[in-house]
Length: 126
Image 1 (cartoon, rainbow, N blue to C red):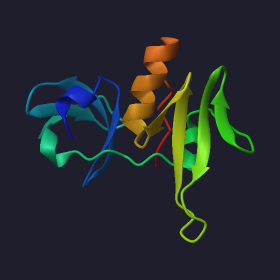
Image 2: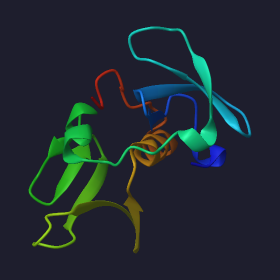
Image 3: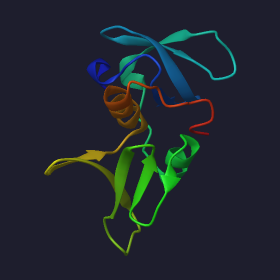
Image 4: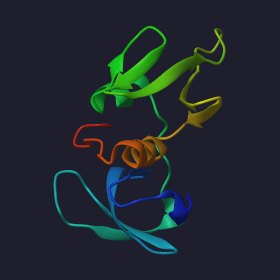
């Protein structure tokens, strides 16, 4: 992961589980477990992005529709990549451009940039 992709409050995966980012520097991040407020520091290259799934979207409060997920006026289009594997991608469309949202932290950042609100992350990923 690149520190420039992260904001305070983003979720990241480590070998010990999912954590919330509390502080960012060039090579390190402070992360905190959900149940405590005791952050600790790790090297940023040990953190991994969390792949965005339908389960994550629902836990963030999105509603599933036939072709998209929505939360208020924010929409992500579902796109089935292949019927054989069942892999899906989620796209945010602005005018004529589409942007793939692959990871939870990308969704968190995009949602905040467009709505000014944080996604509730208390049980967003298990």
